[in-house]
Structure formats: C-alpha cells, structure tokens
Image 1: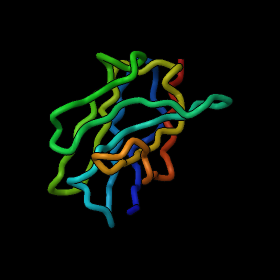
Image 2: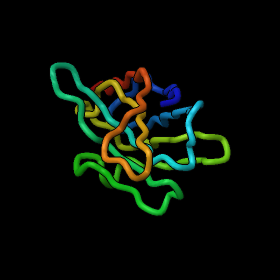
Image 3: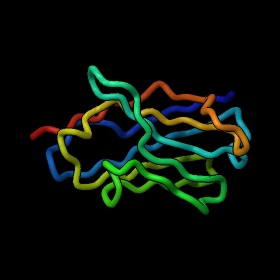
Image 4: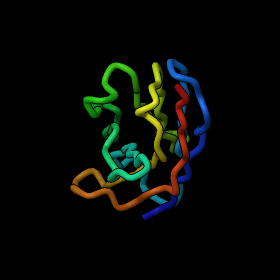
Length: 119
C-alpha cells in the first residue's frame, strides 16, 4: 500500500493561499490515481480533488473548483494541492490518498495535514 506523507498545512487568513505536498514511497506511483480529501471538525471526510496517472484527467469537488489545483510529479513521486482564495469553510485536515488506476477505492492514505483559515 505504500506510504504517503503530507506537508504544507498551516494557518492562513481568508483570501490567502497554501500549497500542500504529498510524498509517496513504497508504491508504484506511476500506476496510481492520486487524490486529496479533507475532514472538517464534526463532519465526514470528503473528496477534494483527484488526478490520474499521467495527469490527463483532474476532478474537483464543486466547492473548490476554480480555487484549488491538483498536480503531480511522477519523477519525484509527489502530489500537490495548490489552494488559492481560501475561505474559513476550507478549514480541515487534508489527506493525501492513492488508488491503483483500475480500482475504485483509495487504499493508501497519509496521516493528514491541518489547514486553518481565519476570518
């Protein structure tokens, strides 16, 4: 299943930006669709964005479209989430996840990085 380690979270004001990174090891990264999820206090974990193996297709939750951008570097086994125009509703723990390209479920998860957006 490999190991995923997120970084880049922190405290930012409304309207600010953050860039999250996820470093993968121990998995065939080039064969994985990668995604970002988040869980706000008292809420279920929700999908944020995903990117296919060769970055051909990206998908976003409606709540982040136009503000967040997912990208990946297959050579260095990294996934990024650029978050712009942040709002307090984006406050959550953000998780990096991976699933083998022909599977439906994400089976590799990081420990999460906390993002707090102050008003």
